[in-house]
Image 1 (cartoon, rainbow, N blue to C red):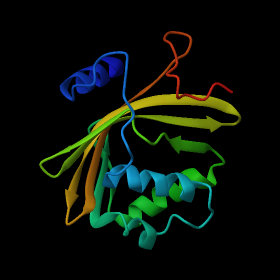
Image 2: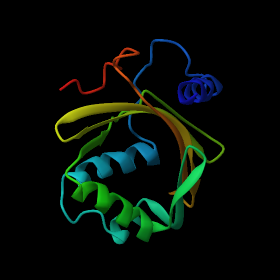
Image 3: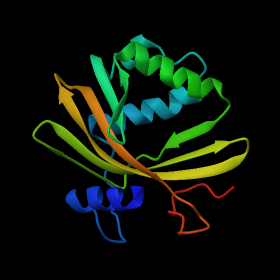
Image 4: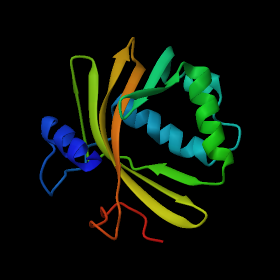
Length: 159
C-alpha cells in the first residue's frame, strides 16, 4: 500500500519512470537538508535557534498524513532524539527531483540510514510550503525499500 501511495505521489509530481536527473541544490528545502546532514554529525547542532534559520516558528512536519512536529522546539527535540540514538541518517542531496511552483517546493529523494550497523533505505516524496522565505511545513510520504522484495535505489547504502 505504501509503495502504491509513493508511486501515485511520484506520478502526480511527474516523477514516474526509471531515470531521474539530478537538480542543483538551490531551493530552500535542499539547502536546509545540506545543513541538516552536517548538523546530524555535530552533537549539539540541533537547536531551536538553528532550525529557526530555515523554518518559521510554527513549522510542521507531516509524515504519512500525521503531523509529528509542530514548531521549531519540536523540530530540535525530535532530531536530537534520533541523533542521540546512535543511528546514522542522511538525506541524499541533490534530490532525485525537485521543483518550485506557487510558493511550494515539490521533491522526491532518498533517505538512507544505519541502525546497529544495519543499513536501511527509504524513498520519500512530498512538498514544502514556504512563508517569507522559510519552510512553514513539510509533508512527506515514505516507503522503506525491502531489498528481499525489490531492488535498492542506487543511492542507498548497502553495508
